Length: 416
Ligand code: IMP
Image 1 (spheres, protein in one colour):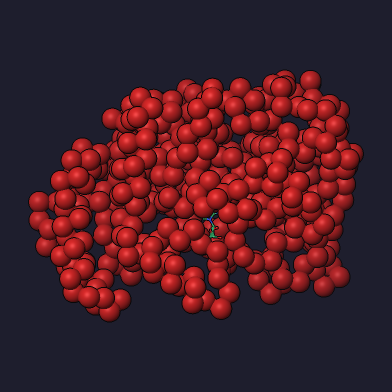
Image 2: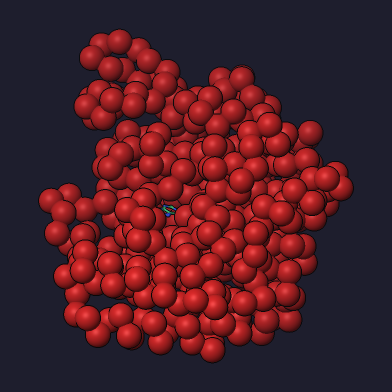
């Protein structure tokens, strides 16, 4: 059985803790796209773990896969592994697909330069994600197979291409050859690199549960997101088979994760931001990026976006996160629909010119004052909090499966 966890908004929905919860009875967890632009924070007891490449299931001690659709920064991955090892977490069950692409240091510089030279910057994480995917699609990308091969001529050939495409100094070829074939890399990666889809298929044959941990959110998807203010990978549920060599028939359940409000760290139009008390959400929700530390832009829950996202992802169940952050507000506002040139619409228009003209139609429901972070049963929530959840279910025509009311593992209300 394959359960997919996807972000329905613009990233940072709290997918990490949802993966942690759903992988309780799973045997494998897999990341399928993106790289260390993602950042997952998991709190267990008093310890906070920040993961960037490695899926959160590693904290449950189950097999953790970095699948073919990913781009991976080897140095950052090694330091993530070392951090886990220092906390006595077993890393021997972490595998990398040989077809995953390597983020070279020079890609980070290119990412930064491209950001600085754009008329309107995208607001990337400057981790080299875009250049690594560009290299992949331009077919000079370096893959983990290249690092563990006995024949380094292909690696050298690719580096020579990179040097000539970017007009770089030839000395870079030797520099990178030394680094990419170093003992430090080989001793780590030789035992980790494999065909991860064989592991997945074997688990499915034995009827084990596989969790696919999405990174970023639907509106950062390269095809469906708010282009060009997007990341470079497929962040929707389609990415779960594109990035693993599973096929869509293997997917049993899609969990769509949404915060009780919306946040965004890029540039571009963000209708839900209108009249939103950003500082309140920054302070109470701790809305600062795990990867970059940047303050996030904050907005109300955006139902038209969520409706489109649920449809694109084929969401079966919702997971609502950070409901506790709304406690204390007199009224809870949400974007019910958009007005586009005088017409009311309830979806996200993929035409960017139309999207730039939509005006959010904002409605409200009564808020609640009680702290709800100590509850883990739905009936214990104040009526207004429960009504807000029921409203979401009704408007989105999708059931809520769990609600988080705080960062701790235990601060989770299981609904069905
Ligand atoms: P990139 O993925 O670094 O190229 O950045 C492209 C866009 O995606 C920027 O707006 C980033 O802020 C955003 N982004 C990338 N990863 C994440 C994430 O994990 N959470 C939220 N936003 C992200």
